[in-house]
Every structure is written in structure tokens, then in C-alpha cells.
Length: 544
Image 1 (cartoon, rainbow, N blue to C red):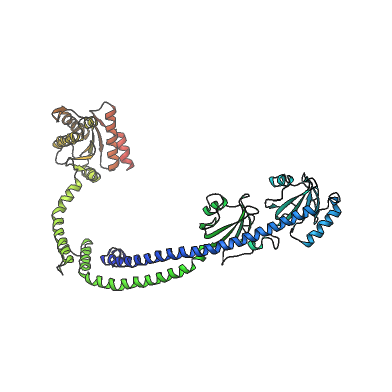
Image 2 (image 1 turned 60 degrees about the vertical axis):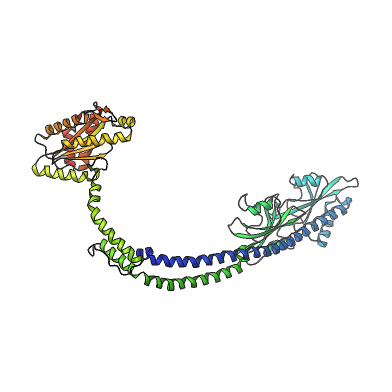
């Protein structure tokens, strides 16, 4: 049995129906269990993620406030007498830094205008430089402690975080600004973020919404990189707008993950604890695998039991179909099929036998209808190439020429638009009847479409050109006779193109030449005929 017959077999369909039932039941179990387990696991892991995110955020906030408090205490305890003694002030900063080395890139003292006067440890080019006049610096000049924006330190070329605390005199006026700078990668600073992990592929992010920046990340490729644009990660967009909590999202790399956000109060940053949902839902995958295995077993049972039973029951049908196929291929004569069982299959076999009888009686009618124009009863355009070749062959055997007249009615469109399509159809039938009355037994009239007809005359008397003109004149006369349509007389005309060929022209070229001549007749006033130039025809014949 061929693959196509197997695919289209009723047995195959019934087996597929059983398989579909098994798969449908398995799908319901698969979806229902997966959905319930997914929701439960997401809830459990969301709680864990939020706990982790809050713990990391608390740790980061502690590290930041610890440094900020230290910086404020140092700013408050700097002896005023040292402000004008850079060397002694640097030594004083060195002693404090050794006691609490929290600022990995050192401490810096700048005047209120931002000019750096003292630093420890010494960084080439730092003393004498000017702090950038951003909003954080302006706030420090106004007497407030600030935690600046994460940025690349111009002297060490490392991503760093600056903090500033004002140094006030007895009157509360800002006399200097003490700056502490910590590299984001400094040991003991953001280690819980950069070195933390969740599962095999999860981790943490520290995000600054104000700067649209990943301040730190467990994934080194994301550290100190811009956050994704709006619309890439919808949960991230909500977090940037202030949402804190957990949810499932698809990150910028197209990975679905469970994320939880917790705020770092001192800076407005937030920590993201993220874990791919593929790890969260590993248990679901095991259950899904079990469902798949049981489904495969069920499908195999259906294939063996249902398939075998149905195939046995439908053997007569298969035999009948095989016999019918051999009949269509001509391997055996067309005949009635034997009826084995008087059931549905037997009933279908009887119906098939009756159909064979009906087909035999109507085959001749179908063949006739395929060759005829439905409206006029004339031969249709599909037979025209063969008719032209036959006519050319007859003319060539006699050493004569074949004439082809291409007729196009004049005024038919106006009639159709004025009186309607029914009147137009009646006019075409009457014109066809009149033209058919002119045709001799060896001539053929064909309707090629619309209001166009072709008259093929292979046996005109010599000279053929005179006989063709006389035939065209008769066509003009019968078409121009008034038509009785809807109780009134209506007159049509016809433009005729005549082409002659000695038997060597192709049917397409002969028809094209006559069509071209017909258009010449229309251009010269309609209601006349025109001959295709003999020299043109001779050239066409030589090319053929």
C-alpha cells in the first residue's frame, strides 16, 4: 500500500481518532498538573527569592551607611588647624584609614569649589583636579552628606562610588568637603551581590534606577552596564518605576526567570534576586516526563489493538478500494464490484456500482459539453488550435490556403449596458445562429469569448482572397439584420479581420494576424472587414 493510501485510509483515521483521545486525556493531565504545580512552586520560590533579595539589599545598605557614617564622623573630627597643612592632614587621614579601611580608593579633601587639596593614598594627578559640578556635589556644598552616582574613577579607571560629607566650621559654614571613594569591585563591599549565586544559573543584580545602570551583578558581563530599554523586560520596567516584590518575566536575553526586587533605602537602588524558571520548575519536568511516557504506552496500545481490529473489519472495503484503483489505472476493465457483506461497506459497494452505470451513460454528454460553448452551443476556444492545424493540413495537401476570419461585434457593450445581460445573451445566441447558417460543412464557427467569434474556412475556392472577402461580406450582412429584443428592434455591427495562410503558419500567428486585422477594421470605421497584409503573412510563414 502506498504512503498516500495509508494516510488517507479509514483505518488510519480511526486509529488516529483513538490516538487523539489518548493524547487529549494526556494533554489535560499534562496542562492541569503543570499549571497547579507551576503556581505552587512559583509561590514558594517567590517567597524565597524575596527573602534573599531583602537580605542582600540589607547587607548592601549596611555597607553604604557604614561608610557614610564613617565619612561623616571623620568630617566632624578633622582638626581645623590641619585644613591648611596638607602633609599633616594626609598623615591624619592615613591613620584613620588604617583603623577602618572602608574606602578602597582612598579619602580626598576638596575645598567648597571642588578643587582637591589632599588625598590619601596619593594618586598621581588627583591633587589639583576639580570635582565634576553635578547635582551630588552641589548638595554637598550646601552642607549635606551625599552618596554619589556610580561612575568610572578618572584616576584609577575603575567603576567606583563616591561619598561626600561637608566639613563645617563653628558657624556651620562649609569649609571643605571630605570625599571617600570605594571601587565597586573592592573586597568586602558588594561581595554578596557579585559573588552570590542562586541555583546553577541564578544570581543577583544591583540596579540604580536614577542612573539606569547595573551597579553590580553576579554575571560579570552585566556589571556596570546600562539597563535594558523600556519594553524589553516588563517586570524590570515596573521595578524601575518603583515596584518591589516578585514575578515571572523574560529578561533581555530571552530567558524566562523568576525575579524578586528589594530596595536599598540609602541610595534608592534595588537588588534583584533572579533564577531561571527552568530550575524552579525542574520537578514539573519530571512529572511531565512521566505523563509523556504513559501517553506513549497508551498510543502503542491503540495502534496495536484498535488498528488490528479495525483493519480486519474493513478488509472488504480495502479490497473494493483496491479494485476501483486498478480500474482507474486501466489494469483491469471497469466492472461492478462484488458485495461481500450486506452492511455499511456493502451498501457503499452497491452505491459505487450504481455510480458506474450513471457515469457510463453521462460520459458522452460530458465530453460534448467540454467541447461546446454553454451559451451558443458553438465549439469553444479550447479546440481552436487543433481546428486551425487540421484546416492548415487540409489546405497544404491541396496546395491551397486556409482563411481565418476574426469577428468582433460592434455595439454589443452598449446593448448589454442598456438592455441588461439577459438581452445580451439572447443577442449572442441569435448572432451565433445566423453565422452558423452561413457555414458550409467544411467550415467551422467558434466562439472565442465575449462577443468574439472565429470562422475557419480551409476549403474556399480560388482565388481564396476573393472568396474570403465574399464570406466576410455575408457575415456583415447577417449580423447587421435587426434583432428583436424586449419588444424593440436593435441593430449590431461586426468588424472582421481576415488572415490567409498556405499551411506553414502556426495557429497562434494566424490567429494574431486576423485579430490585428480586425482592429484595423475597427479603426477604419467599424462594420467592415480588413485583410492582413500578404507580405506580413509570408514573413510569418517563413519564420515558422
